[in-house]
Image (cartoon, rainbow, N blue to C red; front, top):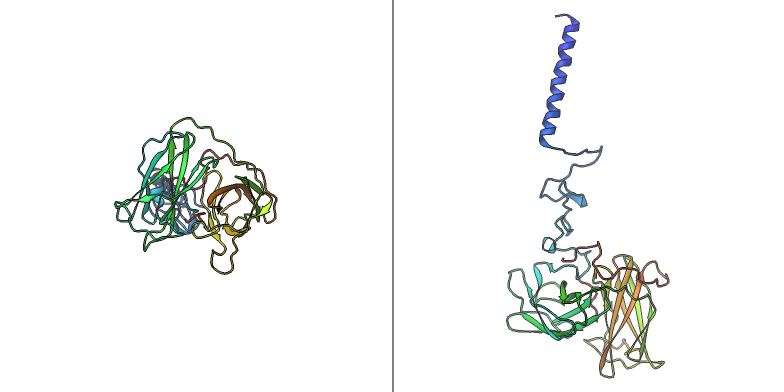
Length: 347
């Protein structure tokens, strides 16, 4: 065979090889392009390495949520996940047991906490004078209640609640099962009736309640611990005889506008330690996971009664002036899943 003939047969062979490869690729489906230096996506059901996303939309391990977006798929949680966003964590689940609740009518709110074995947990550590703290707030953060249910022998908790208006609420259970981790779990509660969410109140440095004025000093700074000082006065005179409430001179809850993430808040000192004074200042340390609008609720006790002062604050750079609350507060944000660490419960 001459040279031209041999070259023709060689070219024909190459065409057959590349044509077969192209056909095999089409038969397997679209695998997508892999750029130089990039790693191939993980197979379906396998975790991707170091935060990469798998071929089927699943995210990496390290406690991140997969594409299903349900809380049960993220029970393990993450140290970086704020409290109250999960209904389940570390094998423990908050289970509401109450049926219809009507606005303005007292109702027995019942719930249980199930453990890793599936049964109701009945053994809890006493923390800040109580075995469990329950916070209930409307989705737009305009109503707030901090109550302490009673548990029956079968592990069912009950508390009398009166929720003023129709619409969605969020219930946060703060507890530590004996021998287990301290947790803050959250679940939605619905009240019959129409609902029109209200915007967050404007940010401010002072709040008034029942003849008392509370001034806030300090700023929430995303990603680091911030000192927050709240000074209590009555009728223009500083209050220097605050009474202990749940083992402290004040209790602070911080919730992020939109998704209602519960923040880490820690008190500075406690009654009887020889250092902490009973007013007028109450000091806390809080860490905001992100910028944005937050709602702070301070419980303090004076003259035998507990009162709650509420603030809207904006997490930003140090020393930044408060900004008006701009987060639409009636519905969950597009942040962490609603139905799915320890958050902002502090005494």
